[in-house]
Image (cartoon, helix red, strand yellow):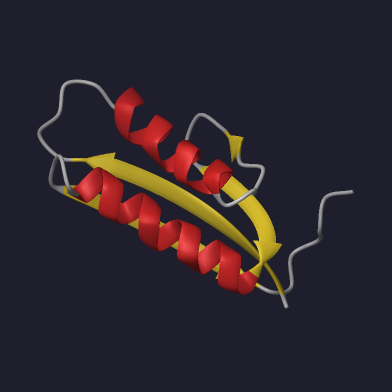
Length: 82
């Protein structure tokens, strides 16, 4: 099944957000997904098992270096980018 996810990452008590956003992007790319990083969130589409595994890895990576809030909206009904 194909799933689309919209991810927002909020590292707490950190001066810069860039490292957390980069870590999430890298985890998604490691799973051969193509993240679209925007000013407020990152979106990605792929096989649901791959998306969930990448999201778990992304959260673990960011959470290992700071406290973090990650919000995720996942859908199997969003249009798939061509």
